[in-house]
Image (cartoon, rainbow, N blue to C red; front, side, top):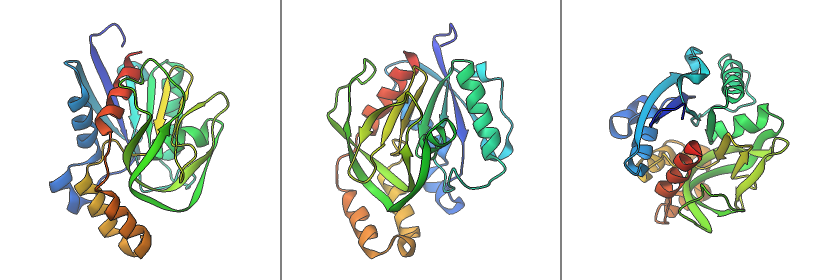
Length: 239
């Protein structure tokens, strides 16, 4: 943590919540700040946000850890802000900063650092349960499986060389991985809350189709473990 007792977290914002939803749900940086503050055990956390579309990044040493958020875009799309984001992530890794990839961030790290992300057979929405693979000191509290809200139509199909899978499920083989001592990713969204997930599914109902929509909405009754996953992330950032 750079010799500081405060964990400095940079949020690399790859998208924004639809404007009509923000009064109820906030934007993605708000969600992550709430998530980590709720999971902190008295730790001091400091947040900074860097909007990927602006492509204005700090010295990588400005933060101890960086979280790459989700996005409605695909990592393989030809978008002008993706290469600068990838470049910054590479420089942050060279500076031995911790990198946390969530959904799009999980896919981006895989796709541009030796693995691959492709379109899946359909959408994953609502609560998805993943099994924990392996063990690590930062995986505390211990869980054999965990539920997270999901919203993705792409998935990682190959991991970077040397990456170790840490989570899997029936829909998404690579639901999370670690890469060395500095990268931790999850396909699911620990920052999401059920009302936001429901609004997203309602907005995309025609796109999802009746069966996927109804299954996703029904799954909102299932347990989720965002607080435990957030604790894992904080533990990893401090390790």
